[in-house]
Image 1 (cartoon, rainbow, N blue to C red):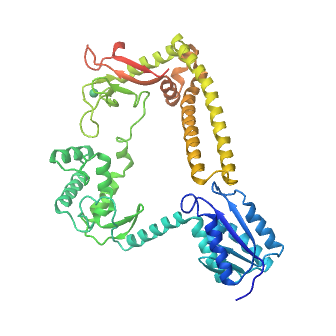
Image 2 (cartoon, rainbow, N blue to C red):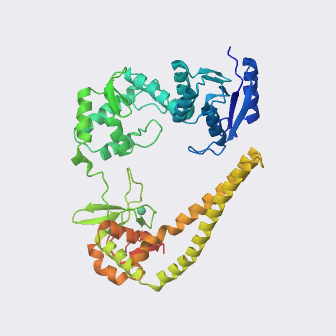
Image 3 (cartoon, helix red, strand yellow):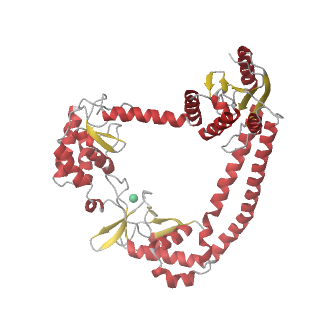
Length: 466
Ligand SMILES: [Zn+2]
């Protein structure tokens, strides 16, 4: 055992262990005991306190220790655990270089020993530093690697709900469900739509594994999952044959892939956006109405049945409705009502200034608090309590502020309704939608008195935001 006469002890308190940090005293006591056990003489204890640590924050004591090492006035280092010494692997490299230049090869931890002079010690320290720097990350990676191994062997992994068609071992077929999958595959390949398959499942009283009604995207997912034709998929990638028997033949599985991923087929499922998409609500049932092309004209419909759930008793022609709402919006831009609303917003601008001040004040108070804590004027529980309260207040102010600023994009149009009316037809759909949405929360559609889908102005009730 080499005698060391000018040993450095390094301790750091941080939040990453045992909540408020592993006590400095405990770290120091353990390190002193280690020095005594080794027969080493401690020259200085370097203590950093970065409970509010974020990467890049300076550690004055650590830097002082590095300087002392460089000057050659320290001959060994004791630290409680390698994760006290460095937060990032790159810091370890720098530290190792400094030690090498100064000829210091003794680094001891209470939990083990590193000899920085040998390759193995360095490797070990590197590994530990990397683990300490990103423990949760590496845990996730380890978990992922394990999953990958299982997947490559074609075996299923547990967790989550069992797949439809299989028993909970994820290998044995559920005879009834497997038969349903075969039927669905046959009917889909014969050209039946997924919506129609969904209706059939509902009529048959077949639910998903979690007892839910089959929606078309879920049916699509089921039929596109290579699992049903005996292929193990991991993270979206087909890895090879699975250990379970296929429910349908691989040929049929491939045919389904081709059929269901055909881009032409998808167009009828992709919702096209129109001026009032998602904004019209059926006054009878409150459901969002869908814009649907039907016969010669497009309409907004309250849709009932599979995938929708409205009452199905409301329809209105789209083009005249969109015209009415656009006109109402343009008039609103020039109306005294809007100016009143804006006067309210100017009052809000005063509020915005107040909130801005509040946020700045809370931020500096948080900094002061950290200083108090660093200088040990307050205890960790006191610090945390005060910090939580201030942070909660600051977050609330931030939320209110972002809510207030939501209407700013209207500024250019206010009072310019007449000009805007001339350009309206040339604005692209997104611009038009932005303007409508800035003013209108949603449009309530009332039942018609003359025929269900005829548009009369009294059927249209815009609910204004401003
Ligand atoms: Zn309805």
